[in-house]
Image 1: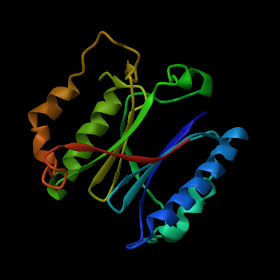
Image 2: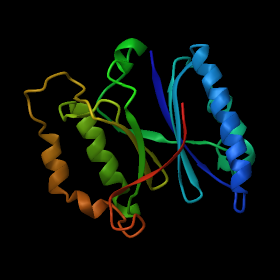
Image 3: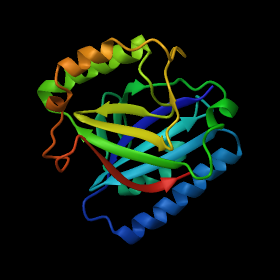
Image 4: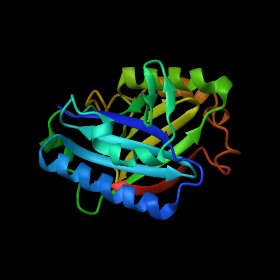
Length: 214
């Protein structure tokens, strides 16, 4: 079974880029070793300004984000959480079109020319629960077609979306003939009104830079 998780971190103000590059190389080596031992399938980290976002596919449910990306801890601020402080804040899953089962079938369409993309969006605070409600409803219905690898999570009012190109459209039910009706409800509440487009440079989602891909 594959477990997908996304995390958000914050790079310390003034942390030198050359030192960050060293830590990234160490983190990539650590993640590659975990791949080789069959505990990790994929690790991707993306950056926007001082924010970093991680997308992980785990093959071992006991593995922690610190085991995978702990080499980056010296450059990250610590988030205050219920159980203490952490460099990586767990994001809460919001949206997806597929639930991975075995690694073989999951990666069969992941070719060498696959581009792994990360992007973020800023929700207006007053629209946060509306966005969450409708996307949860779409997932529960399971009929809307979308990228097999797409995975969207939320932390504070920030969405992080991972997907791959070329896209491989599927849905959760496997029923490709029955149209989604929940999507009509989402469209009726004006999706554009949910996004703080000023923070995203006039867009809903903005593609951000990959800094580690394993």
